[in-house]
Image 1 (cartoon, helix red, strand yellow):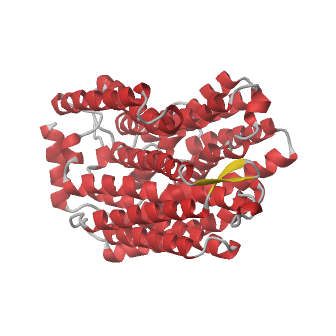
Image 2 (cartoon, rainbow, N blue to C red):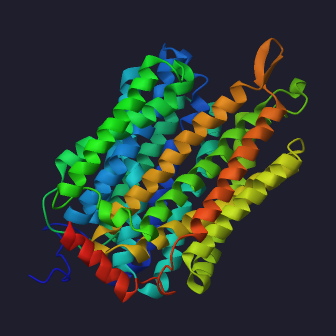
Length: 495
């Protein structure tokens, strides 16, 4: 059987006509990415009230965020690999379905155990973007691929910017379960639209799924991210945190050895260690760190009480509206990112985006008291993030074989997630050490916020430097060079 031949739809499947499907593929996949980001964000406005609403402790409630982070980090590379082997649309709709089931459980229950379990199910949606990018590579002609991939990458920021004010409005004017009923309906619509309008990619990789590799990666990531996310609460020198870091080091060493000896590994480490792929992953980690500090710090800063001397005392709804211009900017600038990548190459776009992020933080350091300057600085950071995030998957597409697109982009998204987790811990550590009492409560000082901005800006400059060291990234039309494709094939044969 010709592996490039179209895969017939299962009996009874009502699929869109080919021409309509071609027109709908991009908007349907992009809406899935936006929905994923919205689903991850909507719980944020609820966090202060959830201990009262669920009858649980703040520490237990924090696991509604941690569970999503952990499951998303573990499942993104695993589902990416499964998509390469068993069908990208099939795995994508499964991830959206798990996200929707999690939302329904949140809508039906107020029990904190059920809610944490549901949020862990929603973490599966983190694989939506890498799977969608892989489908776009397989389904679209080269001339449309760059702008589509750029838009898909930007959906994470767009959805996050939309999700916060939407959730805040629902929480303020309706029962909090209403928010999850709304997201459940959107999730069901997303599953149906994806199955109907998106074609199954004919590109597959043969072999057995690496179950041992998946379990090893899961254990390593849980140990690392649990230590990073809970280190501030448990104590960075506590036996639990140190033990988790030690477990991570041991498991990674064993997992690395197992991956090199496996015929069809979960992660092709020979491919990952090539400079074009490995440096792209490093840049993704640094960019994720730099980007995430913007949302974290901006939300806290504008909600700080006016008695602090710098805070604006804004409500959660107003805070979400402050971040909204950044989401609109990401939507508008994704086509520009694609054009820059087509003319200059994605590594230049990535370096430019990281430099713009650093400029945005320079604006934040210059003035973080006036609301218009805060919004301007946050929007500049969002603009740089659009350029950088849009370029990263294009770099991966040009550096890996088509049969490994989803798993390679899954690893790249994983690196962003790790960067965001480390950013959250680092920002929290900085702010905790720079507080003053306002009305009897500890509130971060403006100097602490400025230090967080400086730290994020320095990491953005490091991401820019990493991008500039990435070797030449292939042809401008978005297809790998013949030599790159040959190297990718050889990597498969060697593995």
